[in-house]
Image (cartoon, rainbow, N blue to C red):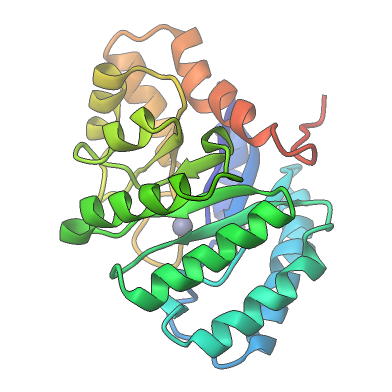
Length: 268
Ligand SMILES: [Zn+2]
C-alpha cells in the first residue's frame, strides 16, 4: 500500500511516528502551519516556526526517507490580534520560494469572528497575488456549517480564486456537499474522539464519491492518530472496496491536488 499524508503537524510528533508512517507506506507528508497549543507572542515566534517548517522538519523527515512539504500562515486561533496577524502575513512572502512550500494554510475560521474573517481574506489575497494553493480549516461543532458557508461566500466573491486550487478541510456530513458543489476540494480529518471517525469518512466516500476528496490524520500535539489514513484504507478494504479504489483515495487524489504546485514531486 502507498499513501500520501496531506495534513499532519509533524513538529509535534516523535520519530517513532515517522517510522510507523513510512512502514505503513507513506510516500510524502505535508504540514500546514498550526496553532502551537499556546499563543505566540511576537512575529519572531512565527519566523522561527516557519524556519522549523521549511528547514528543520524536512531534514528530520528525510532521515526516514520521507519527503516533507509545508504550508504557511497564522492560524485563525491567533487571528484576533490584527496587528500581529498583519506582521506575520508580511513575512510569509520571504518563505514562499523555499523548495518545500506548497501554499497558504491552514487558514480559515475558528469562532467565525469579524477579525478572523479579515485575516482570512488577507491570506487569500496573499495567495492570489503569489499564485499559491490554499488549504482551509473550518470551525468545529455548531460553528462548522455557518463558518463553511462564510468561507465559501468569501472565496466565491474573489474572482482571482480558482476553486480547483483550494481544499476545504475538516468537512463532515453537514458540510461536504456545500464544498464539493461549489467546485472546491474537500478534506476529511480523521480523529479518534472528536470530529470525523474512519467509519464516518468511508460512509461519506460511499455517499458522495471520490472526486475532489482526500483524507488526512491532522495529527498534532493532542490526542490524534498518525496512522489514521492507512486505517481508513483498511476500513475501505474490509467493506469490499477494490485496491485501486483505495489507491485513488489515499494516493492519487492528494497527488492530483498537490501536484498543482510544481514543487510537489515524489522521488521516482
Ligand atoms: Zn491541522
